[in-house]
Image 1 (tube, rainbow, N blue to C red):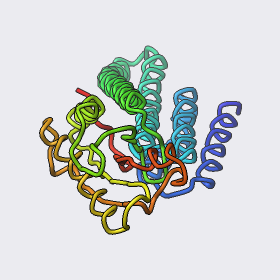
Image 2 (tube, rainbow, N blue to C red):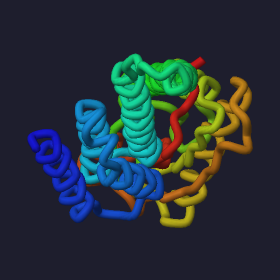
Image 3 (cartoon, rainbow, N blue to C red):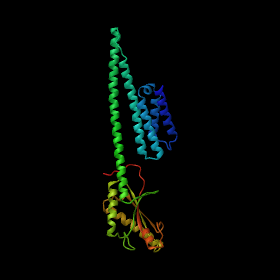
Image 4 (tube, one colour):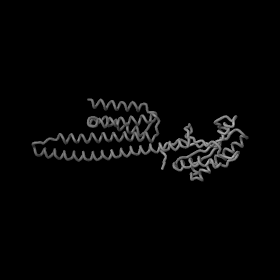
Length: 294
């Protein structure tokens, strides 16, 4: 009775979590259906309650990750782990049922019935060995999946460190690296030598993450005409893109645009404010897939 109550409570907790899931996820639905089927199997409930409980807890973790808004790849990975634990529970129940059959096979006085029991035991042992082999294989797959998740997290951590080193800031448009200070000669689009170090960091980042694209936007202060500032902003954005290409970045992953004086970040009434507005911004749009850092 206690086993049945534990299994029922686990299933109720998972179904309650499903009701608050913000969006449909096929991997979670598949894992949930697989778990419900196992919960309804009397042999699994009685022979593998602990394994079934761990499967329910793993599915709950996947649902929590989806509710938090974690990436699809992370949610799918957790759902996969839950599904594998359901498989382990089913195989464990089958193996233990076979063991019970073997243990309960007593010696029979009649030689014919004894021979029959022996054959049944042999068959059960073979089934148990096959189930154990399957269980070991699935455990290996589970360990591989966990190791893959660890490597993926390491790549995410490394990416965040790279962004931090470039002074990137998180915005609604994605991560933004601002190239400020004195980058160009006055009124020109020719880069000063002092700008090379920041550009080299950008180039190294883009080359280490070849699937990443960037939008390069030029901005100016309000000194001069609107038309001339727009043209200057575009030429400066193009100059930054050209410098990155010369450093080995693929031109296919770069786009340029000009805001001119339309997007100030400080007042144009002071020299300090105008200097802050004379900038080039590099925007890295959000990307769902994990990036390479090799």
